[in-house]
Length: 211
Length: 185
Image (cartoon, rainbow over all chains, first blue to last red; front, side, top):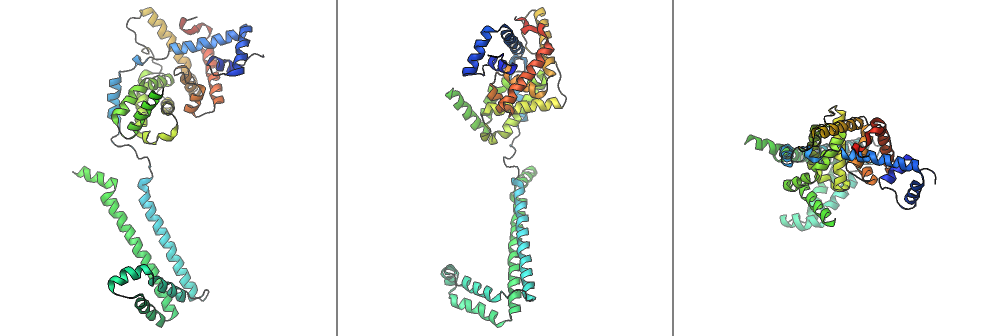
C-alpha cells in the first residue's frame, strides 16, 4: 500500500475509517515507521488540545448562570410565523385590488357595449337573475317566510327591467356591480379596523398598559 | 440510550410549549458543552459566558420551530458556533485564559507551566480561521464524529476532513515540535 495522506491518517486517528481501508492503513502503520511517527504526532496534538480544554469549573456556577439567563428570557416568545401580523392588511389590500379590478372590467364591458363593440349583456344577465331568483333555497327559506312565490318575485323584478331600454338595463347592472362590491369592501374595512383597534395583539397590549 | 433520548425529547417538547422548568433542566444538561465550545472559539471564559447566555436565549425563542431541524444537540451546537463566530467578528476576542481550570491544590510552578502552555495553545487556536477553528473545537473538545460536525456546520464530510487537516497542520506549525502534549510525551 502507498503511504496514506494526512487526511486519511487523521481520519484513521479519529476512528472514522472502517473496513478494508482501515485494515490497509493499520497494516501499513505496522511496517512504516515514518507513517507511524506522523500518526503519533497527530495523537500528541489531540492530547494537547484535550488537556488544555476549559473545564466547566472555570466558569460560574449553574445557579448564577441560570439566574442571569432567567432574567433575560422574554416573557413572550417571538411568533413562529412573523408575517402573520401583516396578513390582515395584506388581505385588505388584496380584496381592494380584486374589487377594483372587477369594477374596472364592469366599466370596460359597459363602455364596449355602448360603443357597439360587443353584444348587449342585459338579456343574458336578466336570464341569470331569473334563474338565481328561482333557486329552491330561496323558495324554501326567504320566500316561504315572507309568503311569496318565486314566479311573483321573478315577474316583479324582470317586468320593470323588460320595460326599460337595453342601455338603461346595462346601466342598472353596472350600478349593481359597483354598489355590491363597494358595500362588500366597506364591510371588510370596518371589520379590519375594528379588529386592529379592539382585538389585535397590539390593541390588547395597549389596553393592558393603560390599566 | 433510549431512556436518555426519550427524556431529552420530552424536555425539549415541554420547553417548546413554554415550560420554564424543563428548559432550565436542558440548560443544566447542555451548559457545559455550550460554554466549552464557545470558549474554544472565542478564547475567553467571560466572553464564552456571554455567548452561552445569547445561545440559550435564542434556543428558548426558537424551540417551537426546532422540530424539523435535526437532533437537538446538533441544533444547539450550530447556534453556539454561529453565536461564537459572530462574537469573534465583533472583535470581542481576547485571550485571557489564566482561569481556564482552577485547582487550588496545584503547585504554583505547575500552574505557571500549565497556564503558559494553555496560552500558547490558545494563541495558536486564535490564529486559525473561524471555520477551521470551529471544526477542530467540535472534534477535539466535544469529540463529535465527522458526520456530526458536518451536520452542525452544514458542510459536506469532505469539507470537514479538509478543514480539520488544515487546522491541525497550522496548529502543529505554530506550536512547534517541542510543545509535546502538555509534557505527556
